Length: 86
Image (cartoon, rainbow, N blue to C red; front, side, top):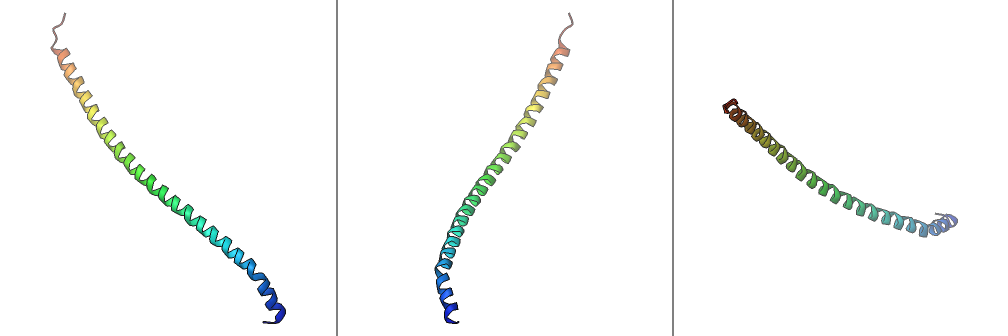
């Protein structure tokens, strides 16, 4: 490397160090954000699974209650049919 080229390279070295430090800080910030995103994703996935289980249980309870209401209606119809006519 010639003397003027070497001098330009040496003069640019602090700028490269600043750029690398900025890039390193950006990478650290990106890693922090990614870690937060992954944690939120996992929490949302767990909440979604819990909601799916709750919804399935609610559907099952709704089917059970619907059956019970139908059975109660059938019993009422039978009782009304057995009542004497006035």
